[in-house]
Image (tube, rainbow, N blue to C red; front, top):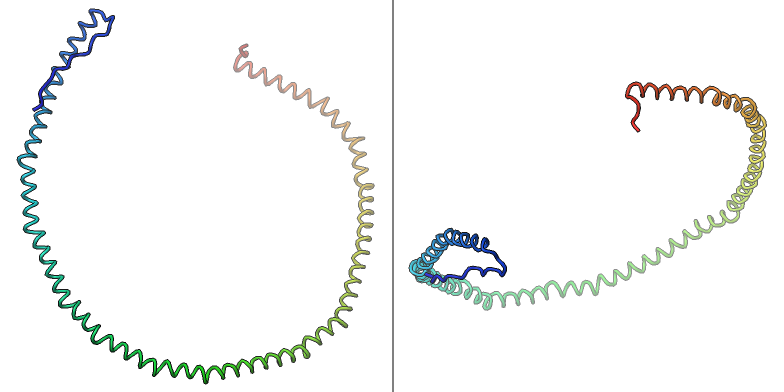
Length: 253
């Protein structure tokens, strides 16, 4: 249990009056009365927990650890050691002996047998049969390609070039020149026709419409706007103001 020590209360600040000191003392006494049972309960609970851990939980934990080590870990370690020894003795050692005594010599023999029965004949076949045949086929292919190129050049390419150079080229160039001249002449004719059409349209449509607008329509519309539309719109606005004033009253200023 902790030894209780009484701590001095807060020192009064200089300049405090008697009323402040008289109020502080009952408040401190009330605080001690409220906090003291809680502190006693906390200290008792702490002492009980320490005693429970020291005299019950710690011995029980050490006993359980000893039992786990003696009855679980040591037997498991022994079983694992025995299984490892059996695995090494019954599996690993026989397999190592089999590999060293049987499989290694057998593999070496098979490798030599495959070398003399398969690799050496294939190398000889490639060197003395396939290589000369490949060279002969390559030479024949190059000769056939050269012959085919020569035939195509003199039977197809050169006649087509001559046809283009001496027949089709001049004809197409003449036709292109004729079409270019016709396009140029048609452009001049088109521009002349559009100029005539625009002049006729301006004389027959634009000028009369402008004259009618300036002489007839604009004065009439101006008179309608000044003599009819504006007075009517002012009268309508004045009537609307009178109706709103009659319904809602005069606006406040």
